[in-house]
Length: 410
Image (cartoon, rainbow, N blue to C red; front, side, top):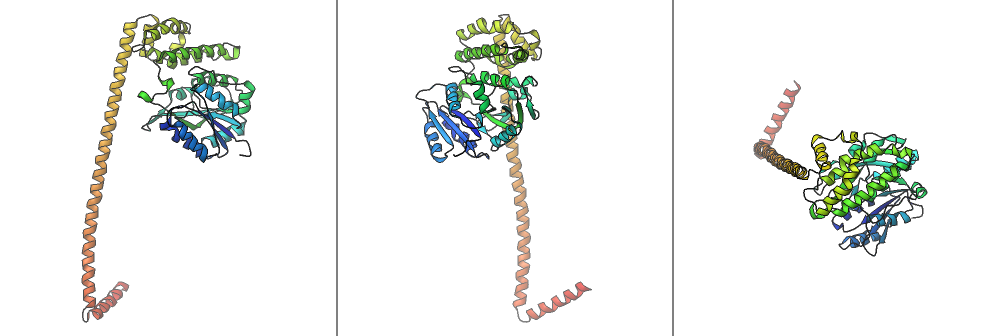
């Protein structure tokens, strides 16, 4: 490629053979052609490496880096940042997707207003291709387009700490942004850093990042919330973000909204694991999470629903048995609701199938009647042809037609 690409897309890859082709196809088929796709194979031990090699050989816009051993997403993303030559840089996880015209829209929008950072919307989806709105992005308030603004004017944007960011490469280099290495949830800190530093931010909800949810054994590392490493790494990132927000008076104006996000989403998801966690996990919740929450202003709990308020009350007062009973009961209700929804979907599909059958039956009945009518007309035509072919038949046929034409004129 003679000219530098307009956009560099950085994708760390580790054991995502089931999803990788769809991910890469969503990039190779973008309407914006002048892009580079930087894939970092993090020592995958499935067929991801073979898939990557195939795509590298078929599309010269793809660059492939290989880690000698598994090092995690943060190191892989940092390797991608080091070689990215695009005017803008963005990230994609190897099990996620982008809409076909995403980068063309993002580039034009960012370039028109000289944005150093553009944030955009996200849609959650699963392997059955069922879609739903991302909670984080709903809270962030992606309701309309904003140009040349910043996070201090739109504080709710800090709810969106996902990787769906579109950044000017020069902006990254000026601030020397990198991902914190060897911890999970590194994208939360990176997102907060770029949000606080951006003085010319654009909000562009017209573009959607398709963010996959994986279940069971397919879960991504960060989805395994009950793991002790996840809890410890999340606390590390939370404390790093608190240091960032306390670093100057301007950033401090975001503290309360960040506390609110922690209470509504981050910490609550770890409280919800207390019915099935290890003793070490519970100890960390007591020794580190509880003191952290006790320092939050009381008003950040006001927007919680009743059950979540009770959970915090029980958690902060060490009422473990009651808390666990409540968590289990809520999970039971959630499973019952999901079961009812599944049965409702099954019933709806059954009704739909029956309706289709009835429709086909009605169509078949109509076709039978039409066929019967055509047979009658065909029989009449055959009779008429037979008359015409008989002796004197042709003359009689012509006379009849002459009379008919005369009477029609009259």
